[in-house]
Length: 387
Length: 175
Image (cartoon, rainbow over all chains, first blue to last red; front, side, top):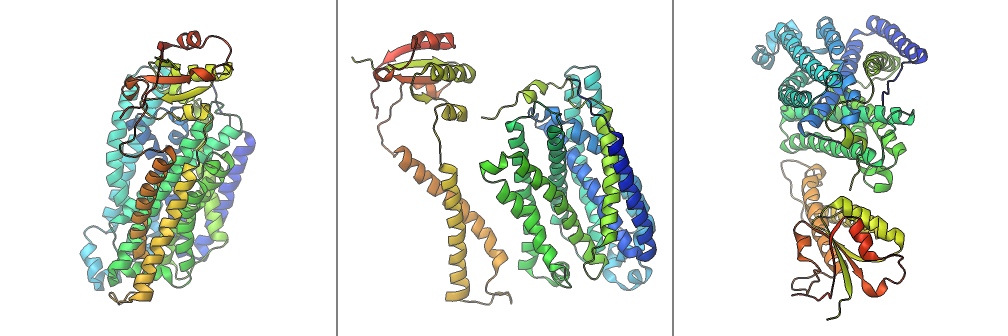
């Protein structure tokens, strides 16, 4: 059972090549159009951070619900958590792009705009970065502790590590609920500084959970098809596809609730947000977003013939990863750019960040055996069978 | 008394399932299995299939389409009223009602379909071979007259597979 994946030279070169392409495009785009470059930077960094956060929430949830079926897959979300510190360092670079993305950092806006003045005690650059550092420190600390408890369980064994992980997961979920909410308010909602929505953080939290889980499922399926995870059977796959199905409904619920309440209330300072997203060419993204993130997973994973088919589940989770890109594009770009833009800059940024994420994730995944040893529910997971 | 049924009582799901597979292999025909909670594996092992989920989907689809059509008819065609300057076809606000009515349609229609198909109605006389199957026991029932095809002694097979009790009984409907 000592399954350990080895990173082939080819894979490493591919990720390095992706990063090189990314760096070249990023360097070019910062010269050509800094505002667009910073919007891309925020989008991609937040996207891969949200996948890592979603994966960490997934594993914390498995611990507190004492789920047996997923025990043998826990190394995958654990390895994804290792991206969080790198995302933190990159996010700090946002310091140089504040003026390009955030309207509230402009001195002239602060001087004349009453609402920005009112929000100034919270939305100012020093406090923004203090919060950012606190959030990242909390996430890095908690994910490290969870990861270490899990690795020590392999080395030493015993139930105490599982109980410790469970306690840590409870604390982590509590911390994450608060910090991630404020993080989405800070980094994404404040782009549209005049607009506010309480559901915003919840929707983005669920989006992170959905797309983090989708990425976990994709990696597990790819590993399974490459010959790892031999014990994975139809029941595991069905559990994964139900997970994605359920989360895409929750995503649809929150995304629609936020829109519907604002649409129905019809208060100008709230509708302004969606009015902006319905004009100057952004409207198609609004509909495609619902189509990809809710409708497709809902329809494709509903019939049993499809949600037990590994190829269908794989296709759906790949689509969902692009769904997260589109969802964030809809939230970030209308506030920074005046018209929808998509070109070599967007593709280059995505490839660069994807290369970085893949490299860090694969390194962490290859560092330890793929299947944990002393997890108390491991046996149940290996012989998982649904009724 | 005509003891025409053989009844095997099991303590847990695992021994019940191994017995089900064993008697199927030996060629016995199971009349019915009574369990404290639903076990899908038994239904599959007995070779029973259900189109129930498809029926539920159809009900949901019809429910959603029906309630949307109803709201469209009332709000747009029959009695258009201007609410706060919104278009009369206020589609996003129809969605919440649609979801709720769809759930209601599916639930009620499924309930009635199930009662019709299983011929269950209030006051029906029921057959309960062993009352302990409503508590913690798993009960397998065989029709004695149809056991010609099987090979070997049914009782000893059941006992070997972990039955805590095997006995014969005449089944009578109870009110």
